[in-house]
Image (cartoon, rainbow, N blue to C red; front, side, top):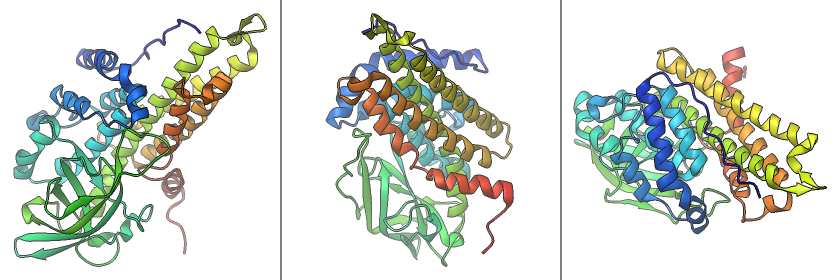
Length: 390
């Protein structure tokens, strides 16, 4: 095999501070994450100690206000950090994205008192978050959720089941969407629920084809009582809050997808330069060179797309359509690139001895989470053509 080491991605970063930040992230990855990523994924180990380190280093609150312990970094920078983390280990990159998603409601819609009370611990105090929208019978049709929150004096009592929750059962806090009023989107409210709340229980983690180190579980809310001070935003505003969070979260998934694809390309290129067939490296054969060139082009196109959407967000401009496009393109590209990486390695690519089979299994879930790619196409089409006629 080749000794060729992958070259770091050349990045366009807006400030010297952000360049120093990326250098810190890369050094941490090489020291703390990459050496054990494959073994820990194979063993299904969740690296809670890594998330504690990320929190201590200020990397769990990058896009949030410094006033509350965040990093005050633009999304353009935050997403490139996510990409680097996901390239090293998707469980970590996606975990950071989910944590950021879980903080979004409070940071964007909480009162000043709520933000001052909770955000510092969420952003830099070692806590880990999760986001509870999906249910067993409410996935893409999120507005039909059935988990209920009923007012009881100064408290709310939450009853129902949430499904497909990343960090389910291990998170320290959950941003929960529950029905407080009429049917449909306008009857949903957001709440911040402590991970140790009485009546909150997690099922056994799902057995997944990839991301085995990241626990995904159902959560059962059996009369979970929380004070009204943990309601986020107005009653009935929850679905709008959820959609706002998902626009940003989709960019996180896009960045993670590009990271996984980049890792697969690096592995495939390294293998191709070292593998000899017919007396020369297989990298000399035009068919394989063209395959690697196509992989690199898809990755660069995806990176450019998610960064363009991030810059719109940073400028305070609408970016919902562009976020859907980025999520759609980047995750589809990741699936193609990782499948091609397995093909480049041939039989070895199908074994556990090389990481490309893991990259391919991990890429698949990115086409599903935070809105399937079919949903992304619906979002894009609505921006182009208006809502569907009935």
